[in-house]
Amino acid sequence: MEIVPEGKNFRLVSEDELPAVADFLVQHIPESLKFHQTIQTYLNNKVWDFHFYVAKNWPEDPICLHFPGCTSTPNSHPYESVTIFCPSERAELVDLVTSEDILLDLTQPLYLNFTHEAIVNRLEKRYEAFDKITGDVYVCEKPPEDSTDELPSDVELVRLRQEHMKAVHDLYPASDIECREVFEKLVVELPAYGIFVEGQLAAWMVQSYYGAMFSMQTRPEFRRKGYGIFLARRLTKEVASRGYKPFVVIRPENDASRSLYSKLGFEKRFRTVRAVLRPR
Image 1: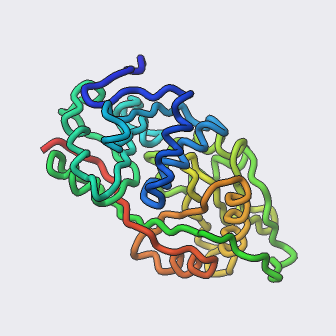
Image 2 (image 1 turned 90 degrees about the vertical axis):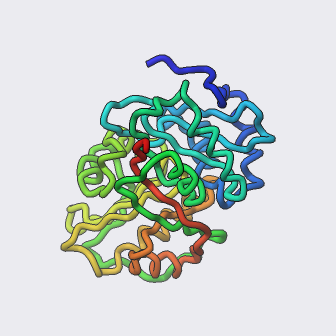
C-alpha cells in the first residue's frame, strides 16, 4: 500500500531525520523509552518496516506516531494500528490524532499497542476501548552482576535460531498482534535465548523491535524451576551491552514476574494500556 507523506496534522519523517527525533525524545525518558528504542532498533537493525510521523508543529507539539503499531492486524493495513508518544502532561495533543482523518479512517477500529495510560485516557474521549490489557513498564538502570548459580547438567541456555521461532510464537500470548515473521527477523538481528531441557525448549525470551524484552514464556510443565532468572539476567546484560535500556512490560496481577525482575534491579516507571479502539 502507498505510504502517505502528509496527513492533516502529521508529516512523515525521513530516515535522515530519525536520529534527531530520537535525540529529542531522550529528554522525555522514561515515558518516551518505548518509542525512542523503536527508532533505535529500526535504524540499527530494520527488523520491521515502520513509518514514523511527527506533528506538523514538531517539536513545539511533541507528539509522534509510528505505523503499524504492531505487526499483525485483521486487515494487514499499515494505518490500522499505531503507537503514540507524547508527554503525559501534554495529553491534549492526542486530539491531533483523533482528528487525523487523512492517515486514519476515523470510522474504523484502531489497534493500539502498549501506550501511556494518560494518552489512552484522552483517546477514550473519541473511542471506546475493548480488549484492554494493562501493563506496567519496569526499567533497569544498572545491569545485574553475574551470578555464581549454575543450571542443572541436563539444562542449557542457548541462543535461539529461526528454526525455534514456531515454538516460540505458539507460546506467545499476544500472537494475535505480533506475527511469526517478526520473530524470525528478531532472532537474526537481536538477542534471543531459550532454556532447553534434554533438548526440548522449556522457556524463551527475545528482545523486541521496540527495545523491550518480550514477556518471558515458560511451558507449563517447566514452571517454578527457577529457569526464568537465568534467561532474564542474560538478556538484560546483553540488551544493555548493545546500547539499549532494558525494560519489560508486566501486568499488574503478575506477582511472579514483578518479583523476578525486581531481584534484577528493575523498577516501575509508568503504566501502559493495549487496546482495540472503536469509534464512539
